[in-house]
Figure 1 (spheres, rainbow, N blue to C red):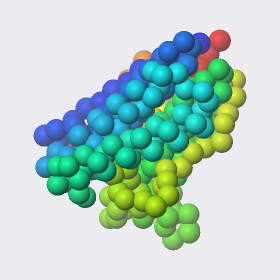
Figure 2 (figure 1 turned 90 degrees about the horizontal axis):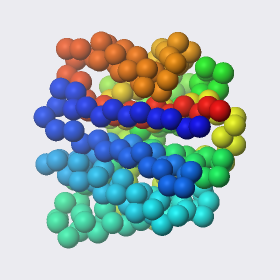
Figure 3 (figure 1 turned 30 degrees about the horizontal axis):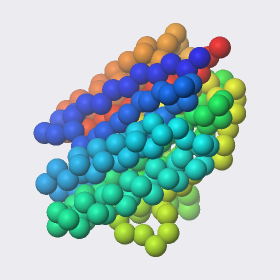
Figure 4 (figure 1 turned 180 degrees about the horizontal axis):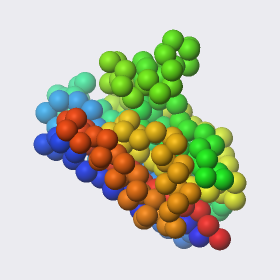
Length: 243
């Protein structure tokens, strides 16, 4: 059984430029979080266009996890670039994204930018996506610690996004996993993960009887830590896998 719950809030900003979808079709599932970037609210358009592209392709009945993610990311990129050109909004209509696809008991995820996926097993983070950002690169090269990413002065310097011209795909796909090896997933924008650490995610997962309780506990931690700090938009999808 797969259960899930989602939240998306403006934080202390005027508009919410995040978008998300949770889809189910014939026992297959698709979850996406996108965080729009750019001026004049064009990021909101980009994130919405991306999730709409994923939804259309999912509804056609994806053949396998790899083909679905490649087709969805490529389609979103093409459509957003086209919209930029037709509206004269180059460099103002971009988005990060993270997506999880589940087909016939197999799952795979893809991401671009700094929207993240966390995979949990045994109430512990088994793995997470690595941001396409300057601070993440500094952490990988051991120049800063992992815990310093969230508050690094270059936190918003991204190296990849949908809506930036590329010669070859810039998104990154995971290997395929058996769903039975997965306990839970968290997909979220940076406005969420920068205000909650891995330990808090694990503790709340262990204590929570449902995906709804787990997301509520994490959200409480995020809003408590972010209070009075000009909170960014924040979006999260909590997914639990059970018998």
